[in-house]
Image (cartoon, rainbow, N blue to C red; front, side):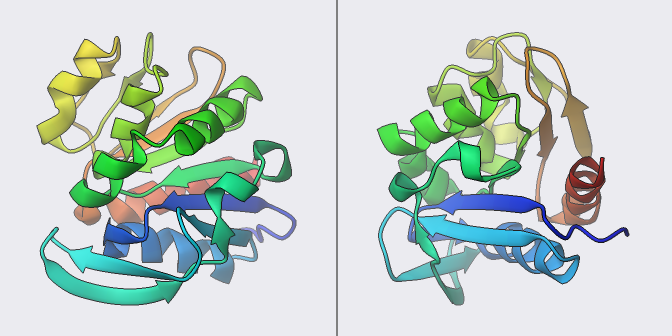
Length: 184
């Protein structure tokens, strides 16, 4: 993989309920490749991850809060899953506005598993084809998107690139597609 030096990535999460590997893999892999990755939570302090939505996962420190950052300062937005994480993230006006700002600027957004729920609530899926965990397929379709069951899917329609994956087992393909997009 080519160096991602100079590339700035924003990962947004709530402070609890994030699927551990869906946050830690992109965070650590992109940093290892030289990207400047900011982990922004709803509140300052720690982020408590979970495994399979119910087992205690790793605790990680937030770099900042997502209400204090701007899309203009980053090259890409990453939205990890975790049912409880995104169930609260998707109704947060600051998170919705941030996602919309990335899209309006034509900057790529990557989401995995339940992460697409944020885009559903922000009204950003009309005309988009994407994948996610199968449990939110109907939500995607009802929001005007087209759901596909694929390991990773890239959609360049409607003004911004959307990179999506279904679940932790897809992380290799998901992170590789993020790296490929950032290297372009």
